[in-house]
Structure formats: structure tokens, C-alpha cells
Image 1 (cartoon, rainbow, N blue to C red):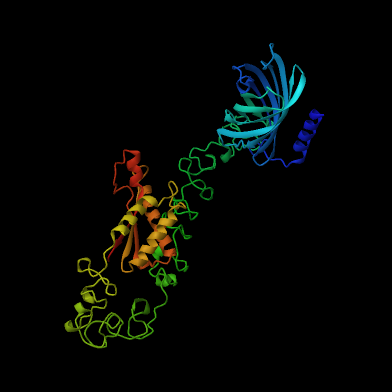
Image 2: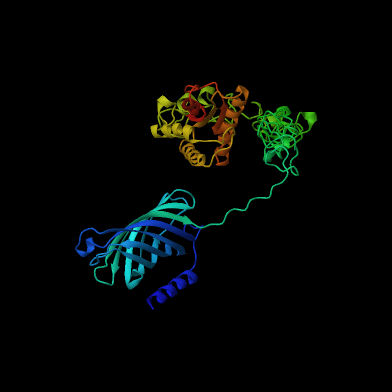
Length: 496
């Protein structure tokens, strides 16, 4: 009756519970192990070491919960018995643990109930509980070590057991793909291979690809220099669709033979005398000449296009030779060195003791030793130095990595704290590769940072950038560490 009850309980557990894998992939496992057990120490007798073996099946039935049915067979030295007896037991146990697919060692604890027989007779219930470890040796196999205490419902039958064995996760074999003819044995079937007689990677449709750009040498116009498909495998540094070899402006993206046309007037910027104002080719890209205020100075050259004047197109109300648009005292004649103000009326707008005419930051209090501007704090200099190491790009490209944006945002905040300063951005590389390419890459990386700051609202007149390639190393290019230091973008606050 007890045996029937255990079998029914097991069937219910295995069929009605939701299934999740032993390691989220494989719900079923089998095991086999060698057991050593003793009935003496717990029953006030000397050690009575016995041996046996165990086989079993486990199934996962819930998060971290496995149900198992171990069967044990051994030759036991039982208390009160002069001869060894064959011992058998069938248990139902519950494991708390999880064989995660990435774990090297998986511990577990367990408890349950079982039926124990002596010489296949004299049965009684025992309640095992204990703990163990599974040591992964492959994706599906584990070495198992376990210890347990078994509480018996019969006198003198309490015992302890230790075992070591093997656990295997049941799984299906991956189906083997059907083979297709592949004359050059390059892994691309002849039906898809554009070069069936020459081995090549699948990315190049089975054709040789010397530069590894995904376009086979048979179609690649630059087979030894990697480039995108839209330029037939040739390098396109500025990614404008024009190969560098055909691009008249290889470091600036554009649609006119690879050159930009900012004002969309059909004249590339390099030939346009007014690159930000549309105009006809007959006027070199500039609008037709206009003089709105009639002072004889064309609007495009007139700093004061709506006010007639004699000083480069601007009026000079006080006749002191300083145009009103730059005269800080436009109604009182003064000196050019005093920005149009008399000497006795020199202003100190920010009250820092330095007159505006000599103050590079006339609206921000500063130090005389720093031209009237606030000195950059040491911690700010340290963050700018840290940015040199922290701003990272994709290898060989001017594309920022995601982790670079946080430090660039810090620099944006620094620029807002020092509104009178200009940020100098300089790009540098190591000496690996072509010197000209390194110079282009360093300038492109510096411009990428420049563009990001513009995007974040910093005005162009407060930014400048340049690339120096491999010409300004700060470490030895003969070592990996030195090259890592030389690949950098430097940031410096300067006063113009």
C-alpha cells in the first residue's frame, strides 16, 4: 500500500506541475553514483561502513525545484545482524537548486521519503534529507557529490550516506544539415557561389576577398583596401558615397564630386565665395550685389547693412574714427584704444579692477594675471585631462562609442560655466598605418566632438578643432601602452 501511494504521488508531481528546465533548457536528467553508508555510528555502535550504488531520474517541475526518483542497491552491515543483507530503497525526493547553463558549480539541498527493504523484505519508511554539489564537466554532464541523513521509522535503522557519481542532462541531438555540392570546399554551396572554383568567405558569396570588406576581389575596384559596397569596395573616409580616389573633398561629406554645398546653390563650398548664401555661378556663388542702405558698401560686406555709414559701411556718430557698432561710447568722442571712449571714461563693467578695453572677459569678474577672466579651476583641468582618455571611438573610425557621451556632456557643462572661454579640440593618432590617413582620421575625430558640442548648443565661435595625426606623440609608439596613449582627443579651455 505504501509503495502504491509513493508511485501515485510521483506520477502527480511529474504530470501536473509547470515545466522549466534544469538550466532553463533541459528539464530531464539521469544519474548514477557509488554510495558509502553506515548504520553503526547513529546507533551507538562502531562504524559499520557499507557500499552500494544508485541510479535515478530527475525532472524540473518549477523554478529551482526538481523532483527525483533514486533507486539504491547495496550490501548493508545492519545493527543486530551478524550477516550482511541486501538493502534496496526507492525514494521520492525534492531538490532545491538550479543548474544554470553558465554555472561551473551548482549547489542544492533536498528532502523526501522512501521505502527501504532488507533482503527484499522487512520494509519500512525512511526520510532522507541532505545537500550536494554538481561540478560541470561539459554542457550536459556533471560530477556529483552528495551527503545525506536518513531517518528511519524502524529502530536501529537510522543511517548516513555519502555518494559520488555522474549526472547527465537529456537532450536531443542537433540535426545535421543536408550537404550540397561545394567544388572549392569554402563552405558556400556552388548554387550560391559566384566563384565556385576559388575558395572565399560566405560574406563575399564564396569569392576571394583580400581586404575583408565583404565584396569579392572579382567585383572590388580596390581589392587591397577595404571599403563599402556603394563605392565598389574602395575606401570612403567621409561616407558620402564617393570613393576617396574620386572624391575632391575626401574628408568632408558632400554631393558635388564629394564636396559639400552648404547653401545648395550648385557651387561646392571650396569654390563658393559665399558658401552660406545661395547665389549664381556668374557671381561666384554670392547673391546679386545689394546695398540696402545706399552707402556704397555691398550688404555682404557691410557690418551695418541697414545703416548708412562711412566707416566700412557703419556710421560714426561722434566722429572719433570708431564705428558706432563697436564704439562703447558712441555719442562721446574717444580713443580707438579705449574702444571709442575717452581715457577718463574707461569702463569696468564687471568691477574686477580691469577696464573693459583690456579685459578679455568684460562681463565676468576675473584676475589681472588672466586678462580679467576667471581662472580655470584645477578640478576642471583634471576632468578635461581625464576626457582625453575617456572619449573613445570605433576602431579606425570617427564614430563615438556610447560610453563617450557622458564625459562629453560634462565638457558641455564646463563650457557653460566658463562662457568667455573657447574650447580647443585636437585629435591625435599613433604611427600605425599611412601618415596621411592618420592625419585625416585625427581631424575627423576632433570634428566629431566639435559637431557633438554644436548639437548640445555650444556656439561655433566658442569652438575650434584640428587634427595632428601622428606628429605629436606623448608616449613611445614602439609599445602597445604608448600607442594607446597617443590615440587621443585633447580638450583645452583657451582665451582668444
